[in-house]
Length: 206
Image (tube, rainbow, N blue to C red; front, side, top):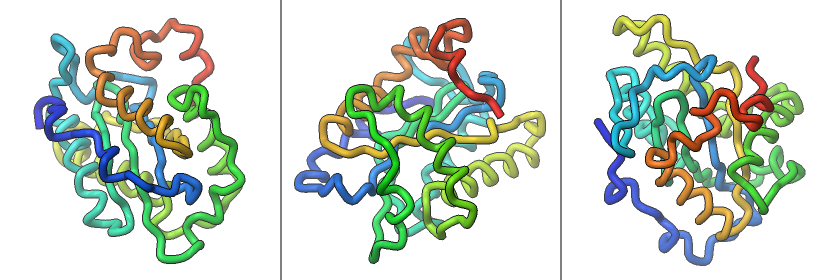
């Protein structure tokens, strides 16, 4: 997949009509390349052009539901040095949601809020829950790294942590979906592009 196609990666708000956001099943995920190095491709005329590593990252993302049947993919985008995506988790019982109920939420600016939540979450829970966001992202990152190692991209490294934001309402969902869809054309204004921005200085690299 060479570029982002809005007709393919379409908004799914119609499918979410009547969705109970209180169940904490929708997550906005951001995963970054180590040191924000642009290893997945480049933005040309507002479109993402993926290189081989970027295509691997894209294909592995699309395979997440194959390995985790409880996961449903919504909007996503592979950018030059990071990935944004919305993942919906479906649970048959309360096991998968117990660990997220008490986490804070910021509905005023959910895109920025994502950079706070996961650091605390990963420290709070030592035992991974099967099919949880942490387990899904860990396996995804491992799969991409493994493919890169086998195809002359062994220098590729992920940032050790990822960021998440629990989507609590439709307004937040629409805002995040628009942010993802428009990320390529707004690339030069993105915090992950502008290394000298005050916002980027608040990112914690581990």
